[in-house]
Image (cartoon, rainbow, N blue to C red; front, side, top):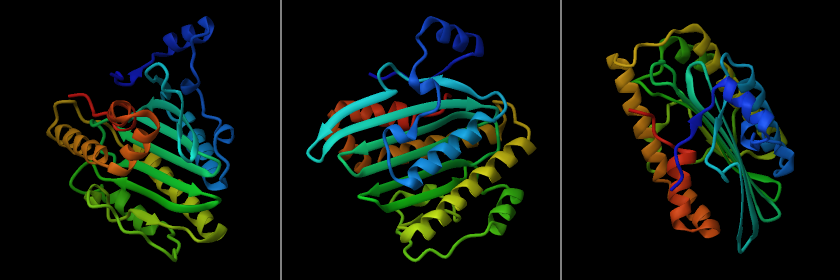
Length: 269
């Protein structure tokens, strides 16, 4: 059973570096080592650069063997790279990059806020096959009943390109906000537009995190946000498509553990 992601203190991180036990997940993922699509590469670098600048940013240790994962499917070899951080206001920031066979690239990025903070959950996913992006989604998913008025106003004011092919949300898509962008970008111009929108969402979230202060762990709003985040994680755990892909390469038990304890681990009670 894969254990939950654990926090590393700064002194422990330094000790691990000196001892040679520091793992790749504790540093930035080199996107170019596993993926080739420009949108995946650009977003991976951009997200990690922003995360590294956050106050109290520190690495989170993944279970042994989960930083670099290799498997095989009929379409070819499977490679997965993971890195995780925490920062002031965020319990976990996770970037996953994956490649399947010669042409399929996947990016999954998520920022889980500390439930004490009135912040939405940032999520971005990109799937590219044979040079074409088949799916790209970004959202600031509410962990309260609604997004804060200030953040909502800024979202509405953010320039939003007119994408030619919006996609339909899955049945469990009610966890997303009304500002979710789920598309199949057509051409380099739309890919660039999606990249700018995703980075814009991220910057709005980080600005909001720098503006507000946390509630206490026992505050009713904190309890409600923890419940909302728990629901988000459990709904994402029901994504059969993700499980099918992982199970083909690594088996059902491994796929279940990976989804529940690496991709969408639940907030502590």
